Image 1 (tube, rainbow, N blue to C red):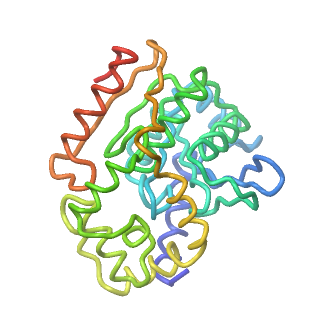
Image 2: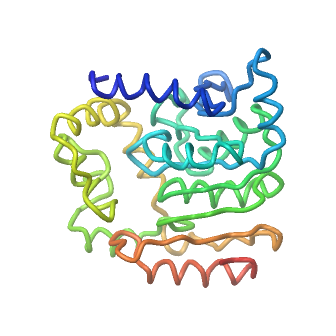
Length: 278
């Protein structure tokens, strides 16, 4: 890790501890570990832990490329007072990995759900961005007793071939891997440019450190994740979500990857199976 990022992470750990949140590694099964930022569960901090137990649990799932804390830091700080915040790294991002061969969104969903249950979460609200939204939809389908509600932003239920084709044409890339698994720090700048409303005014050395820290490892595994993500249109069936599950769609007007038209189509798809969508 570069010096700038190392200093930032040290400060963040101290700051998040003040909010009752710490870094935790949860073994899902032998060979599979999911890293969480989660409420302190140390017996010497029982007051904080008991308070977290009483707060509604909110789980944030990040998009493809960056890890949990780099995506959700400001939301964590804003909401930690009133909610029990859980921010995992999806497999092959941050501190999460598996030695197994499964790469599907369903396996990501299974590992997140098992990790949350090991941390004592019985019911939660999911907040999913992009790839994290796809995993959120799968979690809601597979674990309706765990997922009480969802907020999904800039995502789809499944990344079909037709959605893939039109999105890549709009942004001028030949594949998701070309965009999301960059070969240089300039590629990281391009991701930031496409995925933020206003470009992040960061110096090049910071982008270089981000590239070294977040985009060098697990390249092969991330290519496999993307390959497992795209499904044939004819193979996609719209799941039926329970009526009690509240689903909220939050979208950016200028989103060029998952456009407002995709958001409207997504709402129509969800409402075919249930009416509790906003």
